[in-house]
Length: 236
Image 1: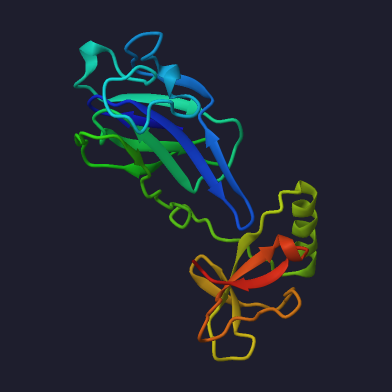
Image 2 (image 1 turned 90 degrees about the vertical axis):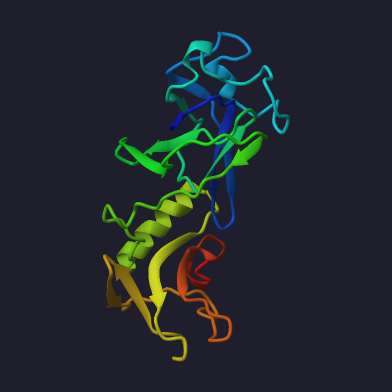
């Protein structure tokens, strides 16, 4: 992951992946590239790694990364790696001096290509420390992505085998949607590229689906806690 900063900024960064039954937080573990650093010690690029030891204090405090004194009015970047590959749901950047300088955040996709997940039109100066958690732009639909459609018994068994072998204990949303809450059991369709296909293969767990018009559960999970069977779920 890399981000571009403008003005004077001291930061730490971590990623978060949240599943139905798991929450993984990763701190940056390696600096691979950077445009500048104030020195090779207490204000070097490597100070961005690991948990913060300055935040929430505000000011010109050692133990943080900043640019060289002669390069304060330029756009800079730092590129970091994390201990493992994950699907990103949140990025937190801890800014401790002149916050508001982050103007772009990029991350690598499944094809190892950089994709912008946050852009700002300009930097700003905020004279306090903050934990910056920008809303990540979802580009999945734009590049043709969609939630998995499990349309046959063979597909369901293959995916169930793979997920069980991974032993993550994580449930996953799939592309099934209920389009009629008033119908007993619902009217479930696979959603793909904006079109709907009626679900012909059902693998709902016991007593599922159990959503009601008063308490809708119109989305579908491949639920780890029930042997990777289908469960209806709130779409939030």
